[in-house]
Length: 152
Image (cartoon, rainbow, N blue to C red; front, side):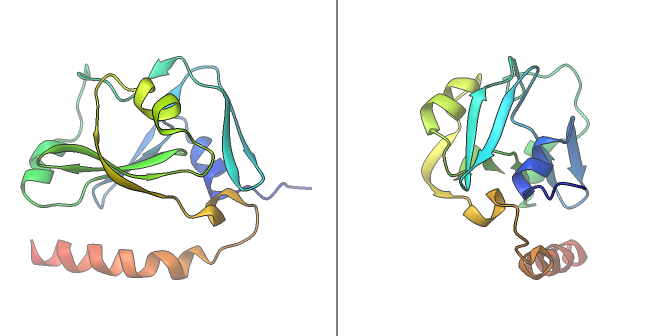
């Protein structure tokens, strides 16, 4: 019998970063040996990966995020524990998963400090196995992206 996994578990199983043609990336926050669980509608980081992905410099670049942000194109980075938006000012933390501690689980695990204004809590339904009607939730986002892509 197959196990129904939450949306957050599905993201956590993505091995690298998936480049979405719409200007976003989906992947895990860190990599290496880790133990991340979904319990009682929250993300629980028992053991974090020892390889950081949010670093000051990278060896190889396949996407010029800064140019996209400066041109006003939306650029999002979605992980199992948080969501960032790239702006002309830098990387801004938008959302945090329920159960995640901002300082310990995000800020201390990055090589730089993102912009932190007032991050919202990620939708708790993402951390449950029950269906949440994702198609209906993302349809307005897809329409927005299509409209903006057509006008550029």
